[in-house]
Amino acid sequence: MNQNRKAIRLLQLALVVLGLPLILAGTDKGKPQAPKADTSQLLWPLPPEKPRVKFLQQLSNNFDVEPRKKKSWMDKLVGNPDPNATELFEKPAGIATDSRGRIIFASTQRSAVFIVDQAQKTVTRLQGDRGIVLQTPLGVVVDAHDNIYVSDPLQHMVLKFNSNGQLLATVGGKDGEKNPTFMALDEGRRRLYVVDSHLHQVLVFDPDTLELKNRVGKRGEKNGEFNFPVGIAVGPDGSFAVTDTGSCSVQVFTPDFKFVRRFGSRGDRPGEFTRPKGIAIDKEGNYWVVDAAFNNFQIFSPKGVLLMWIGQFGNVPGAFNLPLGIYIDQSQKVFVSDQLNHRLQIFQFLGGGD
Image (cartoon, rainbow, N blue to C red; front, side, top):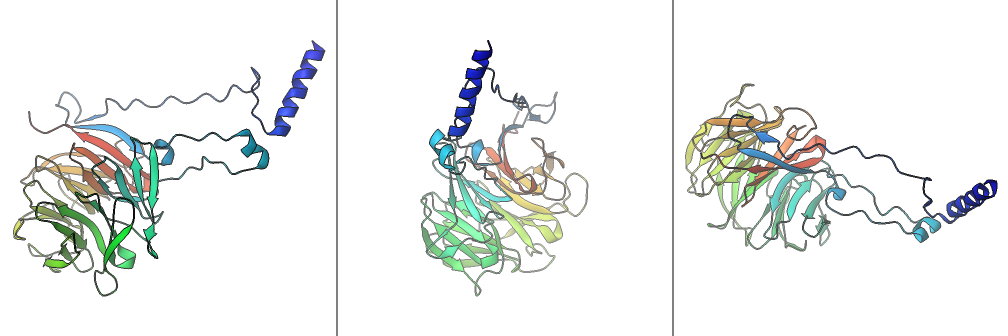
């Protein structure tokens, strides 16, 4: 028996010297893994009401997408770095998807745009091209050709990349935009809308040439005027809505740039706003508005009537810590950037009709 113990001990020491994992039974059974919370039935509103929104998943780092890599015994022997470095999706902002279903979002803290391909289990990073380095990427939109448009407020510009991350064109600079934030595309009319919160305007570009075609609004408190706008979304009928953060309201315009309505006001009750940021419009024409102060998003009817709200401060699924951007894709998946929780939360809109 003593000889057996001695032999096992010598083998363990040899394995340690070689940097190999201990594989003998009973030497390392590993730590028990905490069970994951069941979010499959996380629905809003609560029963007995008919569910309208379902929580799907959250993405907080590259290993929520990519498989972990095995470190070979040779890597351990020669001291190669661990290939499984975790990269947090720090301070995510604008979000979009492309025709391949890839999730594309800006990370202001990482100074990068992450391209997440869940089907291929890959994460790639777009950080610039042709000598231009992204500094504070914020807004992201993708057109029908999978070109990626990124707003960079610190550089006062919008950059256009192809689907492979090659820089195609830029617009702005110190003589152009002052503080471009979120953007939206009207594919039917070939318009790229860019909100400039310091110009207090919505700038309208041709997405193919990046030529400036129009300006909407000016600074003021009247209908059709803005006070530090931030978010924008285009509806199924071509109308567009803008979150006017300074006036704590949402303004809606026709495709001909005519003011239609304003809803919301400053306050802390449901249907009111304190810091409205991102906005999205679903296939039924409902408005989904993120409020960074309330740590939630509120859903309004096409007429601007509050339907429901989701979220509060926290880090569990369905709670937020400084949410910013929101995007709804063709399948009615809803993506919300949860900045200080360093994650994207993904929901499914189940429809509002009975």
